[in-house]
Length: 139
Image (cartoon, rainbow, N blue to C red; front, side, top):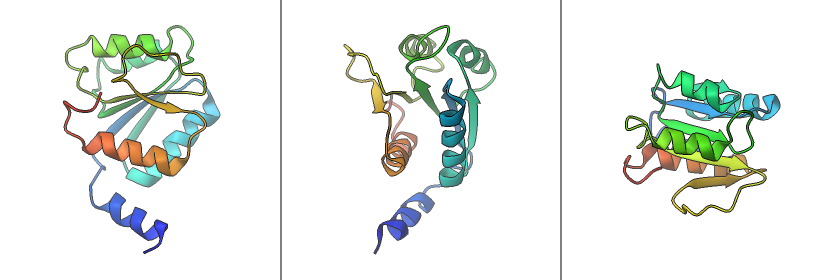
């Protein structure tokens, strides 16, 4: 079986149509590429905001199934946003992936990270993994 066929089988094995992903990315091109790629691959709801303060406003009305956080953001960086989200009891178990070409040295090794640029298939595998993992194992 070729890679495309196996990917189609694995992506159809789980229904992600009810999943919601919140992307916090200030680069419009990257943000829109991620939105389109995730909608195409998972048929899920994807919301894009451009800074951490907008994200904090959004989560007052929506609890996503996954956060994708850029590290270098205006107002507050992705690591600070991660900490604020983790500090909210209702959001602490929601998986979060910190993305950047310039990831900081992290003392907390449990933070999921993705170094830009990344391969879309690797990205999809990571997203699929955290969306299907039990909530106590995904950060």
